Image (tube, rainbow, N blue to C red):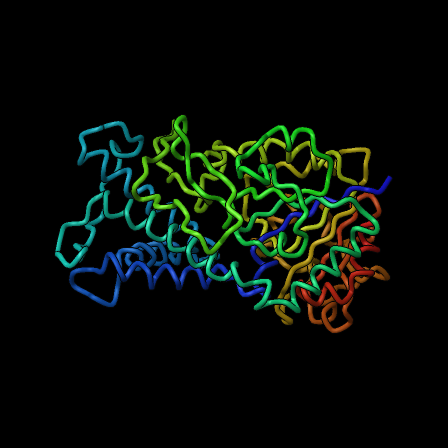
Length: 414
């Protein structure tokens, strides 16, 4: 029997295929927010911009902060959610918010919404949140419906890469992206949805072998068509040119015991993902993860930023397991970045928390002499651990270059 390779796919794996980076999404949110909630006294700024600037000013008071991680679009969405809840708690006389008894919000600027000047309230923050999410889905679908033509050569290269991996392993994908890059490459992967009806069938997840792709945070193919029992039920829609039932702003929110309201959406974005995952099919996917890690013989992270704590904390048990799973990471890093011996940033810390290793045991496989990322990229080799009990290797040249060196990746996973 072939060994099993679990592949965790993050946003960095899709950038070469025309999908937006985290910074690009933030820029898109800036643009879209200006369409609906412009500040009354500054038409060049939106409510989104105001939240972002407030967070930046606060975070920069500590020079040790990685502000790009604190002030990214997912953290901004979470802040906007909280502001909606806090404001609505008093305006609607709910008096149930956990923080309102102890805080006073700073003055929030008035806005221009639908052509009228108004005082900003919780409904404006909620509408902004849902508008951004709905637009993001439309943006992704517009790219994904022609990706097989627009990125034909890249898709073929990725197909060759995964086909070579399949000669050695049974593959299973945990896809954290909304796009269809993986399914455009390997269309026969199991998703848990009925091919004819589009309905999610958890029995397919429980009884299927490997050769799957679970869209942990949602997909461009998810359609909130609903039924008589659940009007927000998610179905699979293969036709990305069709009309999707999204409109999260017109749907009721999902309340958590912590007092936060989450959108009924086809995707999961922002923070507090562990609560958002409770909806089907997300919860069914997530509950399989521990078993899949346990069954795996090797693990490959592709373009994953290691910023999802709810996922990271499931992995470390493999270091205490008798099965010494090999781990490889395909990522991209700047030439002047340090290797893991001297790298001390949020990414390297999160890698360590997910897959514990000794940074001082990292090298080129021959020695533990510290080398910069430039060394590994120039020589097209992986930085790897010299300790066989803590196998881990990192490729810094990006996804498409990794496709040209698939044998080196396989060697680190076998």
